Amino acid sequence: MIAATEPVSKECHRLSKFGNRLSLAATLAKLGRRPIVNCVTALEPEAARGGRVTQEIRVSKTPTAVWSLSGFGDEIDPDPAVQAAVLLALGASHIEVRSAWGTNVSELEPEQVARLKEILDEKGLKVSAVASPIGKVDVSLPVEHELARLRQIISVAKGLEAKYVRIFSFYRPEGRSAGDIREDVLVRMGALAALAEESGVVLLHENEKGIYGDTPQRVLDIMESVNSPALRIAWDNANFVQVGVKPYTEGYAMLRPYLAYFQVKDALATSGEVVPSGEGDGELDATIAALKADGYAGFASLEPHLASAHELGGFSGPVAFGTAARAFAALAAKNQIELV
Image 1 (cartoon, rainbow, N blue to C red):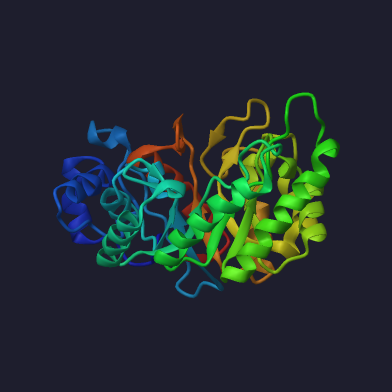
Image 2 (cartoon, rainbow, N blue to C red):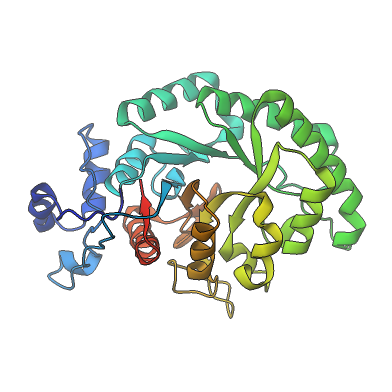
């Protein structure tokens, strides 16, 4: 678990003289050595220079909720072995797969999927979701364009034994409003959901700036109009902030019936900058408390975006990813949620 009542292991203490433990976990993975597990209190970069050491986060011995911790592996490193090492060092039991070896899931070959599964099995990590780029295209493209890509990504999800596939709800062409593209979006989302239901997977719509489903009202419109058990919500507080929405205040009650997956990210309302959990305007504390009160027992997937983005999506690196994990662990501990 990411935040345990037991003291940090002697092994982790011994490692402190080498500086940041997450960087060490990544290095060990590149060398093919077993990562150090449960050193969530990894030193900040300052500690490696003799400065401040982050304090260990502790939670109650009898937490009243248990969530499965996951994270976007490619925010750590392109190499899946390094991704797995760092996630294990943070106490995660799962990984969210968006790319491996610099190749997006929409382009992975069967041999690459098989090798990725072997690596994750060796490390003991399961896949919480396949983070696909489906729907992050212009809505004017033919329906079959994204259906063909989804078929390929479903094969990846099956190969990784993942139930969930993250998707989006299409960009609008320049000069067209959200209302102008509504029908085109719903036709495409309905077709995608039908394929998912037929294939035995569940699509998770992520609210994202610039797509049709960027605000709570339009996300609800998609859910109610498509009305498919194979289409649910991947909730992202930071993305709501970036379109001027107060996530918990303005969207939670409306969308909670469809919320099946929690992506952990926070942002500042003034600039849209992504920051560690609890340091922004994403109302993460209130959202976490409400989810716990509602009996949520699913995934919490770290998507920190704390460094510059690259062509495959947001990026953080091992150290910043650890910073994000500790910030979220603090909010989870405050709400007596055990992360496993």
